[in-house]
Amino acid sequence: MKTARKLTALLCALVLCVSLSVPASAFTAEEQYDNLMAIVDLIRRVAVDSSMSDDPLARGLKTLFEEDPEAYEKLMSSMLSSYDRYSNYVPAGQYDVSYPSNSSYVGVGVTLEQYGEDVRIAAVTEGSSAQKAGIQPGDILMSVNGTYTHGMTLDQVSPLLRGEQGTKVTVSVRRATGGYTYVLERKYIDISNFSSRVLEDGIYYMKWTRFAETTSYLQFVFAIKDLVENQCGVLILDLRGNPGGEVNMALNALNRLIPDEGKNFFAISSRQGEDKNIEVYKSEGMGPRLNKILILQDEGSASASEIVISSLCDLGYAESVGTTTYGKARGQYHLVFDDGSAVVITGLELIAPSTPDYDGVGLAPDHEVENTVEPHPAAQCGKVPERFLNITNWSEDTYKLNCALAALGLLDESQKADMYEFDQLTADALNAFRGYRGIAPQNYLDAQTAALINQQLTDMASQQVVADKQLQYALELAREYAKQPLQYTVDEYGNFTNLTQTEETPAPEETQGQETPAA
Image (cartoon, rainbow, N blue to C red; front, side):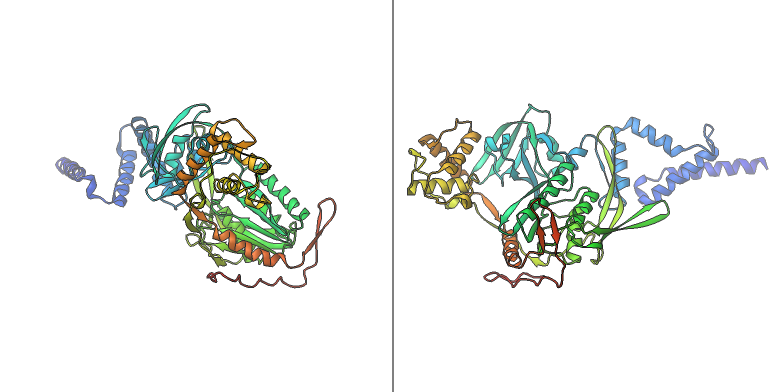
C-alpha cells in the first residue's frame, strides 16, 4: 500500500514537471487564465504557508507591481479596454490634458489635430506666444524639445507643450515654405467653451466647444437673453468638433432651448448591481419658440453634443447641417486618483427620443454638406506699398492694406464702410499686427510695418484654409426661416412670452445656386 502511494505521488510530480515544461506561448490567453486559476486553487489547498481564505492572486499582483511599476498601468489598461472602446486608463498626471474642463491652462496657445501619422496645428490662440512667434494654422508639428512627434497621438504630444508658467519650450514645425523652429514661453491662456453673437438681423449664433465649466453655462443662459432681446427667430448652434463633456450640462442646455413643457426629450439607462434604471428627462418649457434651430455637426461631434443634436432634431425643433457625427451613445464614470491618474468606465447608455441606438454609427445630418479646402486669402492679396499712409487717406494703396489686414484675420470686412479708406478700424488692425510683432502702436502705416505685412502674406500664401461651406449653407437656410413671423414677444426687461403655436413652421425652399445635399 505504501508503495502504491509513493508511486502515485511520483507520477503526480512527473505530471507537474512535464506540464510546467510546456512553453507559455503554447497556451492561448484563455488557457493561460484557466491555468492561473488552477494554480491559485492548488496553492490554497496544499501550500504550507497558504489557506483556503488566502488570495494568492492578490499577493502575486502586489509583488509584480513592486518589481515592475509599469505592470500596474498595463493591467489597468488591458482590464478596462477589454469591455468597450471608451473605458480606459489614464496615466498619472494626464487626466487634465485628456479631459480638460478648466477655463484656463498653461501652454503656448495652439489647438492640435491628428493628421495621419502627424500632429497638425488646427488653430492658434490670439495673443498667445505661438501666435506672436509666427506659428500658423496648418503647420505640421515636427518636434517638441527635441522629441520627434511623427507617429505620436494628441494625448502624447499635448503634455510636451504644457508645463509650468514662464518655462520655455522649443517647437519645430514644417510648412510649404520650409521648416521653422521657435522658442516659446508657456503662459496662462484663458479659454471659453462657449461663444455667441448676432450674425444678422433675426439670426443668432452659438458655439459650444465642450459642455464643461459653469462659467460657460452661465454665458449660454445670458446668450439666450441676448437672443430674445435682439428678436432673433433663428439660432445656428455650432457643435462641430465638440467631443462632449458633462451630460447634465448638455441636458440643462436642452431644457433651456425647448419651448414646450412636458416633452420627453432624452433618456439615460444606468445600472447599479443587478438593478437597471432608465431615467426619462421632461422639458419645462423654458426656451423661446424659435422658427428653427440649425445645428452644425461633423465627425468630431460626440457624446453630450450628440444628445443635443438627436433630441432637438427628433422633436422637430432643429435641422442638422454638416457630416455624420462620431457615434458615441454611451456615457462614462470618471474616477480620478490623487496622482492625476484615472479610470474611465462606461456606465450610461444614451437614448434619443426616436433615433435608434447610434453608438458606432453616428447621426446623419438632415443636410449633408462638406467643407472645402481652398488657398489662403493671402494668396489673392496684392503687395502692400511700403510707404507712409495715415488716417483719412483714401486710395488704391489703402485698399491693398485693408485687404491684407483682412486676409491676416485682423480686420472684419463687414465692419468697413469703405475698403479704400484708412479709418480707425484700419489703425486698430495695424496696431494689433504690431502688437504681435512687439512694435509700438502708431496711427499710420510706415515702410517697416508694410514690409513685415508683406512677409507675413508671403508666408501664408502657400497655406490652405477650410472654406466653411457648412456655415454658409446653414446661413442660407436661416435667412429663409428668419423671414417668417416671430413666435414670441419680448418686453422691455428682456423677458419673452411664447405665442401659441397653431401650425408647424414650413420648411424654407432649397437654396438656389447650390447642389441639393443628401438627407
